[in-house]
Image (cartoon, rainbow, N blue to C red; front, side, top):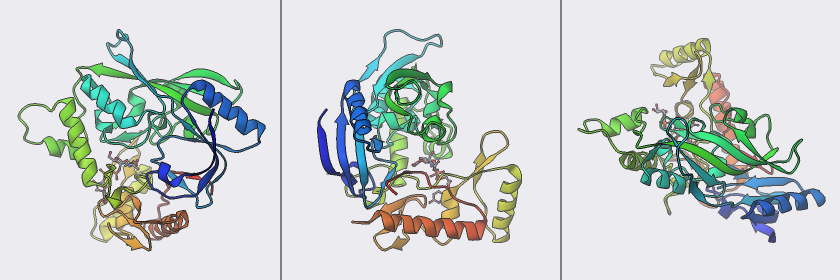
Length: 353
Ligand code: EPU
């Protein structure tokens, strides 16, 4: 284990904001992960596990404990097929997520093509059940290999899909069992020669008028293109992507609440976009609520602002502080609550606040 001290965290995040980690370890092997945990315990230091840093806001003071970057690598295709004829891929938690997607698409395996161009690491995907353009990782994750810091202290375990408790942007890893497991590897089941999922309106529109159905590779390109238009693809030099992606979750409302909100919008001559969610619930567009509360795309607030390409992303325009991000977040939450009576929940992980 190679222990480093006072390591700036901002460059390890897509937001490029935040102070240093008092201690820092990059662990390439499971043994190193275990050693790092032991070190944090014996030194009585709070432990934070860092993935790709793409859904993270680090406080200006940084983190007084140990930041453990899990860099367990490797993407392995198992030989043979499962009962459903799917191929299993084991991917190390530290692998960049998009590298895995690209390999899956190259191997003509369907199931993650709509999740192309998402920043961050493989290990981060089960935590918030990463989803986009009509797909979620919960649909393809077979199991997650973890280091259990709870009752089965220090043991490496394999959690099956059901045990992960996946829902919209949540799992046990960011709710009931937060902090208990360190994700080491994830196993995905993908469909060889399966068709791409063309379900999301943006994708349907993109392929409208095509004579033959798109391939997985064409779908991947389309998703990356759409993401780029929204500032949700990391492009060097584009300050609209210096963000943590969507800053707020899309609120999930009951039928009645959704109707009330729709009425409120209609009274102002506006149409509220909402989509079916679990059971009879509706998912309401948080981006729309933000935009219709006085925070247009491109809104500026000192060194932070709203992306010019998507109202749901708070962006660091240059040298911003976490305090500035939080001040804008509070303002948005307050205005949306006042105008629409809805409490927006922030989506990124907050470290050191
Ligand atoms: N909209 C606006 N203003 C905007 C952008 C969108 O009013 O600036 C409205 C439009 O009506 C649009 C609707 O919101 O049709 C949906 O927008 P979009 O397709 O961009 O999706 P989203 O709900 O804003 C979610 C995820 C994204 C994911 C996309 C595509 C959440 C919190 N966000 O955004 O995930 O890429 O769908 O599936 O669920 C992330 O989590 O960081 C993320 C980028």
